[in-house]
Length: 426
Image 1 (tube, rainbow, N blue to C red):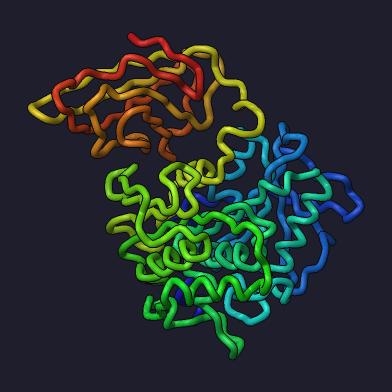
Image 2: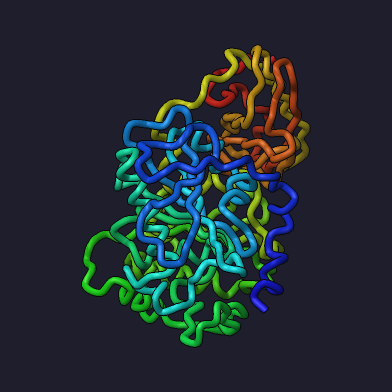
C-alpha cells in the first residue's frame, strides 16, 4: 500500500534524475572521500536500520564546513537525491558538505512512524543519520553550529523528525511536502498513517509542540528553525498538514501564530514568516497555489539555503566569466508593464547556474515572470535561472522577462550583476 501510494510521488524528479555515477566506497579509517564526486561511506557508526551513507564534498570545501543532510523521497535513494536536486552544485559554490542518507528497506521510505524513530537515541533511521553527521564532523572538522536537514516527501517527514529528535545537532530544516513531527506515528509496525496523510489528524499548537519536546525530555537549549513548503492540491500528504506543521514549529520556537510578514516571492506563492520578518525567521512557510505533491523544482534549494543562512558563508562563488552584457527594455501601459532582459555571457567559459541581480525602479512590483524565478518581487531582485537554461555558454545569450505593476515610473532597471560580476548595459 505504501509503495503504491508513494511510488508516483516524484515524476518530476524521475524525469531529471540521471543514472547515478559509480559511488566510491571508503573504509572507516579513511580520512576523507574523493572530492567533486558522489562517494559512499561505510562503517560510519551506529546504524540500526542499515542505511547507506553517500557524501558529496566539493573541491573547495572549507576548513570547517557546514553540513546539509538531504533526505530522499519514498522509492528514491541517496544517489537519486544527488542527481535530482541542486544541493551538490550549491556545495560547489559555497564549500559545504552534503550527506545523502539512503534507505535499504523494500519501501525505500524513511521510518518516521515507529516509537523508536520518534525518540532521541531510540533507534531506527534517525540514529543512523546522526552517525553520518558525527562521521562528517570528525572527518572534516565540520562547524557544529551549521548542521542542516532538508528533504522531499518522506525526506520532509524525516526532516521534521530529525529536528525533533536532535535539536542540539541541527540548526534549521527545510521540509518539502511533509507532515509534522509525530503525525505519522504508529504502534503496529505500519509505515503508513492514513489519518495523517489525509490531513484529518489535527492538534492544538501546544499539543504538537509537546510531541516534539517529548522526543528529548528535559532539553532546554535552543531549537532549530524550520522552513516548510506545501502545495494546496497535494493529494498524497494533504494540504492541512501544512497548517499543522506551522502550528507545531511556531509553538516549539515560541513564535506565535500571527505572521510577522507575508509576501508572494513568486506568482502563486504565499510566504509567511513567524517570529521575525527576515530571511532567517524562526519559522518560514511557503504555500504553492494549485500545486500538487510533487512541488519541488530547481531553484527551491537556493531559497532553503538562504533560510539556512549559507548563501553568504563559505568561499566566494566559483570563478565566473569576467564579462557580461545586458539589454533591458520595458513596454508599459497605465499601471503595468512587461520587461524583457537579454543576458549575454561575454566571457570565455560557460556558466553552469546563474543569478542576475538588478534593482527595480521605485513603485514597480513583479507579478509574474518567465525564464527565471524572481525574488523578492520589488526592490533589489535576483532572477535565478530555470532548469532548462541553467547553462550559459561563452558568448551565449538568454532572454527572460517579467510583468510588473508600476506607480508611474515604468523604466527598465539600469544596472545588473551576473553571479556578483557587474555587467555592461547596452
